[in-house]
Image 1 (cartoon, rainbow, N blue to C red):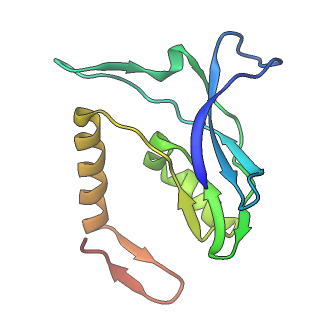
Image 2: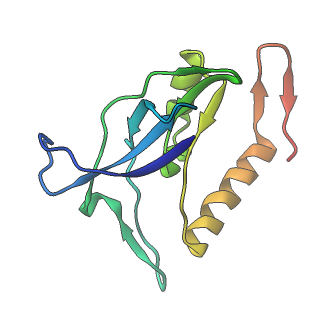
Length: 137
C-alpha cells in the first residue's frame, strides 16, 4: 500500500513544520520505505485559492530508495513532485519501473495541473529503450 501523511520529527531542522511523507507498506503491514516531499506547492490563484504549502510544511532533501516488489521496482514521489521531470528521470536512471505520486488537488489547481500534463504528453516524443514513439493520449 502507498499513501502520504504529515509527519512530525522531534529533531527536525524546521521547528513547527511537518513533512509531507509518502510511505510504502508491505503485505505484512510494515513500512518498508518512506519519502519526504521535496517540491512544495505554493500558488496564489487570482479569484481562487491561495495555497502555500511552505508555510507549514518542511521540504525533504533526498530521494527514497527504490523498492523491489512482485510487480516491479517502485520509486516514490508526492503530488506536485510530478511536475519536475528531473526527479522522475533520476528515479528511472536508478532503475524504477513504477512511479507513485499520492495526490490531492482543488478543482482549479487540478484542472490547470492535469490539463498541462496531458497537453505535454500528446506532444512529447519519448524513447523507451526499444523504439521512439509519439504519445497521443
